[in-house]
Length: 285
Image (cartoon, rainbow, N blue to C red; front, side):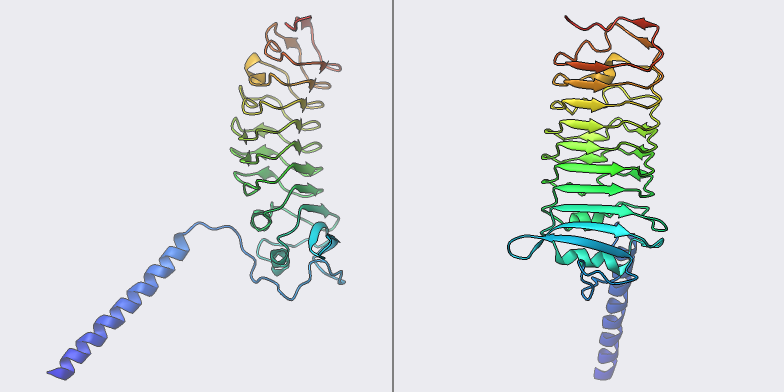
């Protein structure tokens, strides 16, 4: 009788262990997660310049030899999200300035959100000559010290909902010289100190009403050399502190008398190289 009880006990324990392993496996499969490198690449020195490295970074150091800045060049056409090289950043949470420059035949097709997430002191982040087509939701990992962001000469086409959100120290966003055609109505949110927004030299044809409504401190807005044809008063709603507005080199044919009515602080307005037939700007003199 005792042997039967022992056998039953063993079977029950085995069944529980198997079920537990299955549940763990299912939870991992279904759980959403950010990308993670295949390893932390502890053996890779971020600041070491070794021939044939996929990522070459020039580092600047602080008084205690900690890395404060990394200017990284990408020459390799294949640097996937899970490449071990990304793990080299994990040892340098002190980084304040991070720049990625892509040179042929190099390629970068994504924003390294997981790396940004591990850099709590990041203040300046820039990317140039990459093949990043969109800035997705929370792409910059809600970094609270971030003061400047630049995506220059990339192939950006879309700014998704909450592309820029919860960055209380952010002062400047530079997205010039891209291919932006779509900006979600809620792309910019909770940016209480943003002063400069550069969206010139893109392919923007229209702007959603109230797209800038959460940028109450914005002082300079550059939209020159796009394909904007129509403006409504609601586009600029909430920009009572705007000093400079550049709309040069667009396809604007008509400006209604209330379009700029709420821009009480406007000092400089550029509308040259458009197709305006009627100009009744509604600005106070």
